[in-house]
Image (cartoon, rainbow, N blue to C red; front, side, top):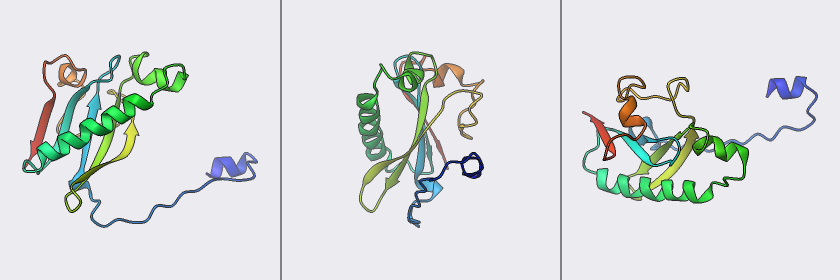
Length: 141
């Protein structure tokens, strides 16, 4: 924002979202989508085996919506798949409403800084890049 103002930009759009107390990190899950096809390769879940089927259903819906929304003519969208970038996204699961919501899209890969304590970009490379037969779930206690 400061760079934009210093650069002479006359107007900056700033969006402030209301604080939602129940939207804590314990209800946020990271989903890893491998490059090229964008298929879900891995999911990290914190401390919540009971709601896993509901979360998985929501994750699949959000993933479908993301894939449907990609415009492969658009260069930025091409980066997610064709350029071997891949992506990850964070999902918030609201137990009260039994609903999953997209929090944000993230870049993918060892250089991205978007990782998880449950997956290691190097040690779990084959899993994160979708070389396994199934989606890998990792859950903490």
